[in-house]
Image (cartoon, rainbow, N blue to C red):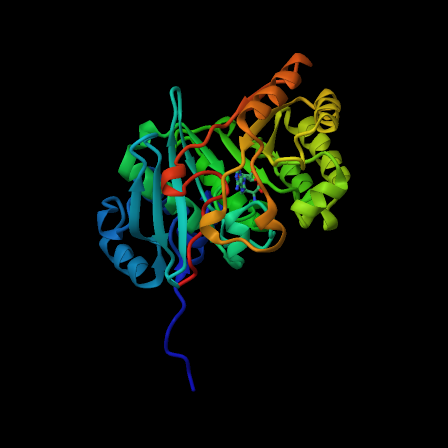
Length: 355
Ligand code: SAH
C-alpha cells in the first residue's frame, strides 16, 4: 500500500546554512533561509502567516510541507520562595520534558533539557532513575528557549545552561545545531560565553566539541576524583574513565581558551573526605577551572531503590568546611544552594512520567 502521508521537513532547529540549502533545494533564492531564520529564532514566530516578507504562495507551501513548531505548553510552576519557574512541555509524540528559569541577583539562567529521560543512570539523579526515551531534536531544544523567552521576556534571560534532563553530548548533533542557533547574534542576544554545556564525561565528544569551533563553556559533572567511587555513582565512568575525560578537557581548554567548571554534588562519606579535597586541589592546579559545589537534592519523591536509596547529603556545616579548605588552597569554589526545591526544579530533580 502506498503511504499517502508525506513526511514534513523539520525546519525548526536548522541552523542558517541548512536553511539556506533547504530553500535552494526547493527552487527558492538562498536569502529566504536568512528571512525564515530571523522569523523563527529572533521574532519567535511559530506561524508562517506572520512571515510578512515571504510571498503568500511560499508561506502556504511551507505551512503544508514543513514544521516550525515542535513543543506544546502543558503546565508551569512558580516557586514563591526563589522565583524559580519550571515549565512542563510536550513533544509531538506526547513525551513530556522540563525546563527551568532560575533568577539570581545578577543574572537569569534558563536550564534546558536535551533528551527525554537519560540513559546514564547516575545514582544520585532523578532523571537517571526514570530511564531514557529519546533524543530531543535541535528544534525541541530551541523551543524550550522560545517558551521561556515569551513568558519571561527575551531581554531578561542572560544565561543558558544545558543542565536539564539528559546528556547533551550523547545527543551531539542536535546540541551543536541548537548552539549554532543560540550563538547567532540575531537570536537570543546571549553569547556563547554565557552558555554552558554540562556533561557527565563523554570524552570523544568533548574532543569533537573542542574542534567544532564553538567556544561554548563546558562543565564536567565530576563528583569524585577517584575512578572507583566515580564508577559506583556514575556508571558511564566505566566506559569513559575520568582519566580519559581529564585529557579531553585539557585539550578543550587549550583549543577554546575557556575555563572549565567542575560540578560536585556533595554526598555524605562518599566524596566529602580530606582525600577528596586533596585530589580536587591537585586537579584544579592542572586545569584552569572553578568548582561548583552542589548540595545533594533528595530523590525521596522518586522512591529510589538499591544504591540510590543509600545516598545522603553531606551536612551543611561539613560542606562549609570542605569549601573553606578548598578556598584556602586558592581554588575558586561556588556553592550552588538549592533553587526551586519546593517545586522539584532543583539540580537532578527533573523527571516526568513518560506518558
Ligand atoms: N548529563 C549532564 C547534564 C544534566 S545534570 C551532566 O551530567 O552534567 C546537571 C547537574 O545536576 C549535574 O552536575 C548533575 O550531576 C547534577 N545533579 C544531578 N542529580 C543531582 C541531585 N540529586 N542533587 C544535586 N545535583 C544533582
